[in-house]
Image (tube, one colour):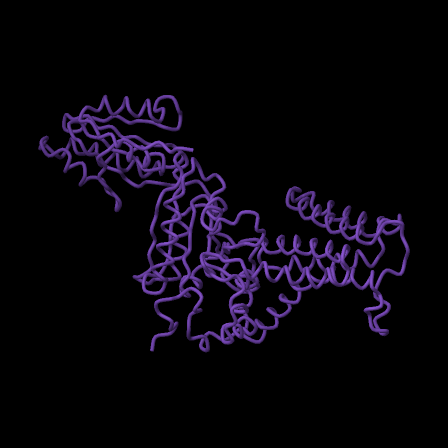
Length: 491
């Protein structure tokens, strides 16, 4: 796809020519939400272009009052441009010299002010995007902690982050991506902490994106940035919590915020970034470590419990005598491997149904699912009770995984391990687990080893993965992000 190059048409001193350009270019006069207000100030025509729904109407009214009052208090017609500029009572007023830039800003919610006889106009930021107020994200709830979360407004998101990091070295670089959508994307980092090479890499990759629009926002950016392909494992971390994003900024990560998305992208990340949760850091180190270990067990169970149990079902000789009770105690006409796949995919049906079911109907849907999968399915002989038990435990382990993307990827890995065991039994399990680990080892996210600090092994960093250290005891930033300043605390 070729992207059309802009001609950068200069602003004409004849307002009628500019008006004709806006009518042909963006449909002023045709699209009901795009409008023009014409005024006469000091015997000069003044045109104000706006986009309803993206502007603060009350503030535009105040600006109009200030501009109209010029006729009653000023007489110097030769300095009309300077007088109007001084009457634009706003902290963000920028000059504009070409119509293409004016169009981009107008469609972003800013207003464009053009003056007869002048080849430059003014851009005033009066944006007021529709959206919700910050509230706690559903997927990252904590027992104790902040209840604010990112929203779909990039201005609000940057403010929520800066409120937590009032460092003069915090940088917000904004660029627009998408020939048609012109989506605002912000690159956030701390200048003397983040690796300049990482910042430049992210900046270069984002500026190289050639696409007509980013309707899926951050997910589209991720696919361009890390070039994931069909690898199911997430290569960046998403968060909707400003405190989590601020913590990663202080560690040396680069944050990518995309307008219209309530989640931000944290880069670079490893496998172990996706298994951490804010709750661990809102409790004491001992409790945080306990919660972390329980979560690790849940994630391990979600991957390996079903393949291991099925291996014992088809090879009962592997079980010690004291554990010989493990396995189906009832006989059915349906092979166990088929039961496992049906039940596992059935749980996925339930998850999807829960997402798409309206809240008033979700309770009824849960009751129906419990009756169908639990009691009736066993009574009619579709499943043996043990299959439901182990599928349920694996599903709980998946739900305990903090990252939704990681939990789905682990489910795919679990199904492939089940197939390997079904076809090759013990060698299939051993080879399947080995291939699984090797696949994780070869993954790199923005030149970052995916299994760091386990492979390559870093003892001190791996200890911090296993044990949640207290904040006073954590004095250095993780080396994987190559921070310029390794020390977290001033010396």
